[in-house]
Length: 222
Image (cartoon, rainbow, N blue to C red):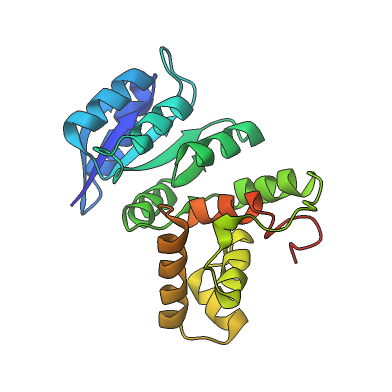
């Protein structure tokens, strides 16, 4: 059973999300929060598998709430999906840097939202296609790094760097396998080793590492 906490300052939306989650087989709502501070407190109390987190909330916004949840060892296993009506670059980047595992818009179809909850609960990263494109565009506007790759990638093999770069482009495991002519089991092994070596939670965090180390950038997106 996937346990979900819903954080949104609008009671009507919380109720709608709760009904959707509770009617979905294998999912249940363990609590509702109307502020970011309440989301942090309830996450510590209930230890949900996934938090659906609004960005704009009183007392503490969803980005800061996500940062506190992901930084606390007691709740580090909880995955956060950011839900917002605002498809803005600063929210995407801020949410991922804070430790969010997913980012979806509130007009996402109900079936896609439920799929997203299951994907994130299983340890994968989730970004809406439009959000992924905007994130890539934002990094593409930045100057290409001229410094060598930092020590953060020390110990990562050439094949693993290739896999990491393709993950940053948004490829799934099946697409990675086809592109690299590998089995999906081998690809899954490479992804697992990257998560371990880079000490990150999921694929969404691997995307950040790929861009921030300069492994992927202007001229290296294709």
